[in-house]
Image 1: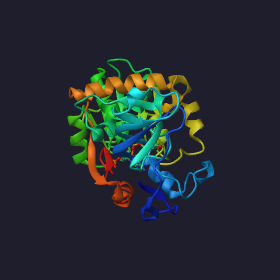
Image 2: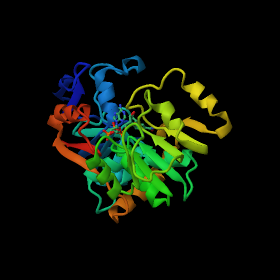
Image 3: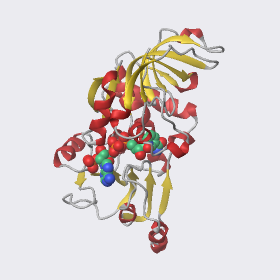
Length: 320
Ligand SMILES: NC(=O)c1ccc[n+]([C@@H]2O[C@H](COP(=O)([O-])OP(=O)(O)OC[C@H]3O[C@@H](n4cnc5c(N)ncnc54)[C@H](OP(=O)(O)O)[C@@H]3O)[C@@H](O)[C@H]2O)c1
C-alpha cells in the first residue's frame, strides 16, 4: 500500500511517498481502508524533529485520525464491524496510509450523511474543544476567549461555546477575513493575536481556551475575571516564559485557575460518546466542519508547506 513517511526530520520536503505491505490487524484492532486522513498541527511538529526526544524517529508515519471502511478485524473483535464506515484515532501516527490499523475502542461509526472528510475535521478537535470547556467548568452566560481560534480546535471551541450559551465568545486571529469567518461560526468579538481590538469586547473573561501558549501567555492570564480559568490545549506559539508562575502568584487575590488539558486523560468511552453526539450534530448542520482543502495523499508535502506557512483555516484533509 501507499504511505507517507518522514524520511528526514526538518522541512516538509522530508516527507516521502513509500510502499509498504498492507498491515494485519492485531488482537483488539481493526483494519480500515482510508477515505480521508486528517492533517494535524502535531504532525508538522513531529516532522520537524522537535519531538525526537520523546521517541519519534525518522521513518515515522504521521497522522492521528482517519475515516474509511473497516476491511478486516483482529482476534476478539466483532466481525460485524467489517464493511462499516468509521472514524478512527490511530494514535500519534500511522494515519498517512491507504490502510490503517486502529484499536477497536477508538473507532466510531459514521452517520450515513457525514462525509469522511468532515469526520476527520471534527473527530479529534471536537473532543479537545468539548472537554477543554468542561475542564474550565464552562457554564452558560460566561464570557469565553478562544486564543488561536482559526485552527481546527479553536473553530470547534467557538462553536461549542456559542452553542452552549456563552455570554460572549471572543477570538484572537491574525486577519480580519478570518475574524469574519469566525463570526459566522459564533464569535461575538474579534481580537488581534495580542488580544487587543474588538469593539465593545469584554474587559475580562471568565474562561480562556488557549491553543497558543508562548511568550504572551501571561498577558492572557491578566485578562481573566476574578475566579477565571485559563486552559491551555496547545502550544503552537511555544513555551511560556520561565517566570509565568510569578504572574499567577501576582494575581493571587483574583483566585485564578491555570490548567493544561490533554484529551489523553479522558476515558475512551467518554471521547466516543462525545464524537457520536458531535457527528450527529454535524449531520444535522448544528456543528460545522471547516475544511481548508482536500489534497491527495501524495501531496502531503504541499499540505505541510501550507501548514508551515500559516495558511490553513480549519483543517487540511488528505485522500488516498
Ligand atoms: N490538548 C489536546 O488533547 C490536543 C490534541 C491534539 C492537538 N493538540 C495541540 O493543539 C495544537 C494544534 O491545534 P490546531 O490545529 O487547532 O492549531 P493550529 O491550526 O496549528 O493553530 C491555531 C491558530 O493559532 C494561530 N497562531 C499560530 N501561531 C501563533 C503564534 N505564534 N501566536 C499566536 N497565534 C498563533 C493561527 O491563527 P491566526 O494566524 O489567525 O492567528 C493558527 O491558525 C498543537 O499544539 C497540538 O499539539 C492538543
